[in-house]
Image (cartoon, rainbow, N blue to C red):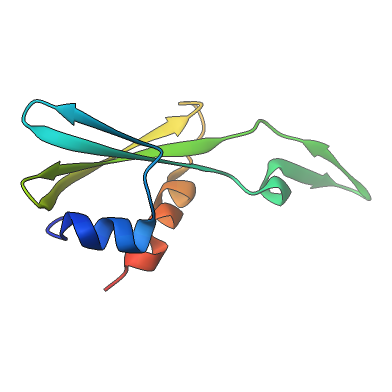
Length: 93
């Protein structure tokens, strides 16, 4: 993502949930929650629900270019990196 234009970011990742100015840059905030099926764990012939989780991905845009991308897991105790990466799946080169 780093180096891509703001227009390319929006074209491939979609409209962000939130846009906010930050120290001379603009933050494009995206959120993705884990699919429902990922939130239940099979046990024998049944399953039990696990904790809902997701990811906030923040793309830092300076001028017209993405200069950084930061992931924040929700809740922070669960590794939701696959949810974060899925936000930008359509942005692959």
